[in-house]
Length: 271
View 1 (tube, rainbow, N blue to C red):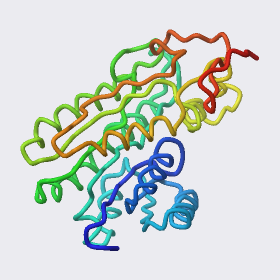
View 2 (cartoon, helix red, strand yellow):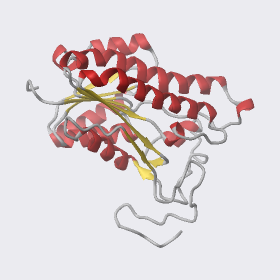
View 3 (tube, one colour):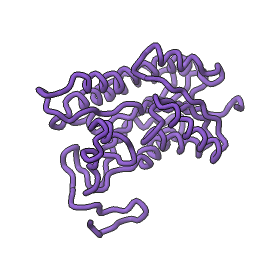
View 4 (cartoon, one colour):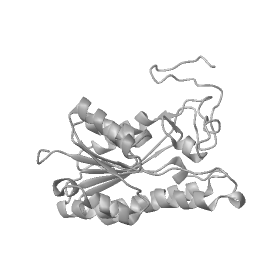
């Protein structure tokens, strides 16, 4: 790795938004650190990125909700990597369950709090000191429209994403005097991810929630993340909220058919 090449550290990169984001940064010549729990998936991502874009990729397979495991994984990076991370994308996390509060499953709640809040905190705490020392760096937290509004049966997931929004603001207030930018991107529904499948514990039938409208794609969100990161040093895009055209809020969605083709400007045909 050349001395001054940029490094992007992306959590939850074995699939979905994280995987797409790693690809977009690799296109720009960034060296990449990708993390997740599924090592085989991460190695597949690494192979594709190194072959197609010629970048260096480090794989860290661990559970980000475990503080000790997170610190060990971070410390395993060579010094020239862990001390020169330019962009940290906190993407790991997700939703579990869609039950009314009085029927909520405690293990679902704990999983969301651990991954969405604690995981973001742990890895950010280990990476930010070197950014402060260098007086440079950019943290981009992947939040959600659920961090800006609350919807029925989304109580704990919405609470964790409201926490991400608050943490983003707090991190920015503490770090801006050190030249560190802190941003947030909050997407609505996104396909090409495992979000719905994980939310419904692998139930493929329940996870088919995008068949009657066009949501965002993981690539849409990834390109937005890279757009934020590519701004001039004196510019910090603090927050972007994005949804598909057929989505007006978490619960207001035009489900009259998939009206838009990702490869065309518009498609009026309906199934």
